[in-house]
Amino acid sequence: DAMVIQNPRYQVTQFGKPVTLSCSQTLNHNVMYWYQQKSSQAPKLLFHYYDKDFNNEADTPDNFQSRRPNTSFCFLDIRSPGLGDAAMYLCATSRARGEAIQETQYFGPGTRLLVL
Amino acid sequence: AQSVTQPDIHITVSEGASLELRCNYSYGATPYLFWYVQSPGQGLQLLLKYFSGDTLVQGIKGFEAEFKRSQSSFNLRKPSVHWRAAAEYFCAVAPTGTASKLTFGTGTRLQVTL
Image (cartoon, rainbow over all chains, first blue to last red; front, side):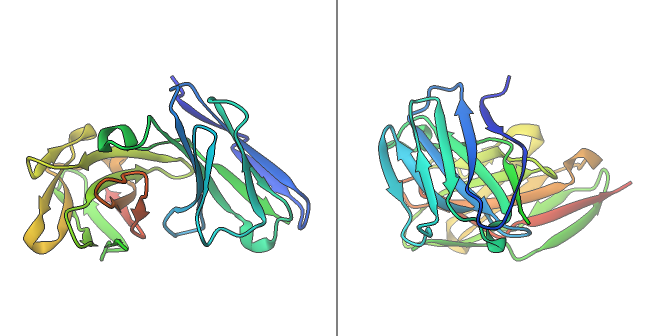
């Protein structure tokens, strides 16, 4: 059974055209994360939500925004995609914060973004 | 800040052979340690994790890893590799008390020959 679902699996957009990637989870986890993974590189954390509390990483560009309308869904918005934003975007969840076992992250299959 | 190094970018083993993937970390105390596997075009799947206690950790798919504090290492092992194990393997570290702050290594790509 899918637990962290990402749609679409592949997304093509044009340079400068806003794009939204979505993530949903059936785990009822409190924390949701977005990572960017460029080709042959390690995943890099962009931001995460603890419930509705948004936590941005210091080096995440302003071009990247996120929304979490409810526990199950989280969106990644790229306001003006550049060629350098082509990557795999991974969503992850964890049950809570504050105790290691609860903070273990579970990943979705990712959305591969292509910018033309 | 913590960091993690996976010295081997690419490893090739024969099916049925044993496997060891290396991971070294840098952190002032004992961190939380993880191994994830990523099949082509897929997300990351958690293989195993270490928080504290027994330094030999058992995971899914027959993998195990051993935490060695003296060597700052957390190497992943499997006694006999199947061709389906071909994938990218990532070691990750998080500071004690904040397992949400994962830092990943650059990964080791495993190829399995028949």
